[in-house]
Image 1 (cartoon, helix red, strand yellow):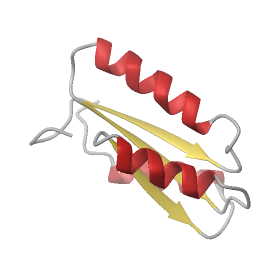
Image 2 (cartoon, rainbow, N blue to C red):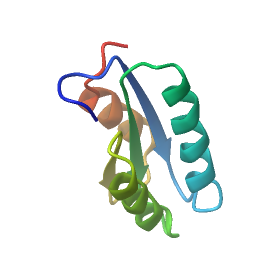
Image 3 (spheres, rainbow, N blue to C red):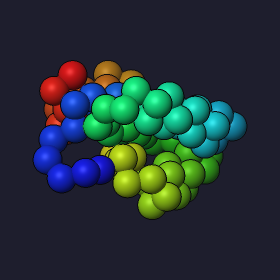
Length: 91
């Protein structure tokens, strides 16, 4: 992420999404980059039992616009709220 606040924040709450996470975030990243706006993608994982956490960590390491939050309990509402509260974007 560039210096300062991003213009757009996208929060993705996820649970056991290893099958689609890498492709979904990759496609979202490409689409947001095409808008020529600053952005962040927040993956808010909530207690997955598969490799979702591992993949999210890799994505955050590969793409500076991606951040990864995690929790030990499956709770979609908490994951969504945690992501929204940590968002830095104007929108």
